[in-house]
Length: 214
Image (tube, rainbow, N blue to C red):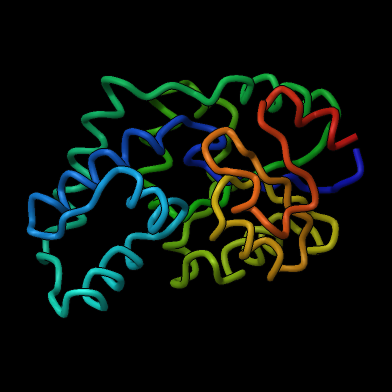
């Protein structure tokens, strides 16, 4: 393997949560008087921390979202996860290969620790991640596209940024990985390749990833 640490985004890379969460986010924003389509939610919020939703709505409308917005939204998302969430096809195969080759890995997500853990528990991915291998934008304050989260994960895992590769599926995540000085492999299952400019490699099936990392 050419890297000393593989840093995975979570939503859309390990767990197939983006269709669920963006459908619910678009619906809830529309319900609150901020008409948003599913496609617009993907464009504006995929890969982002919750503060981006608040910031963009206020910037565009001059109105603040309700104080309990995050709580209500996450309750809806977690309930849907329990009913619908699956791991991304091939993600377990990738983790098995990394373990077999002794390559350290972790997850660095814009989502909260609770969201990550609910998703992993529901899909069975929790057995692949120790608590010390899970990092959230909650840990650093600034979410993607700032590089803070990826730099924090690398520091905590004891690996220099230039020896890390980031696996991302969002434009914000790719920008964050590049800003951190890391190679980025862009997963195009849900995002057109042209929106992941800056990625060193592009791939559309998670089962391709181990071959790219060798």
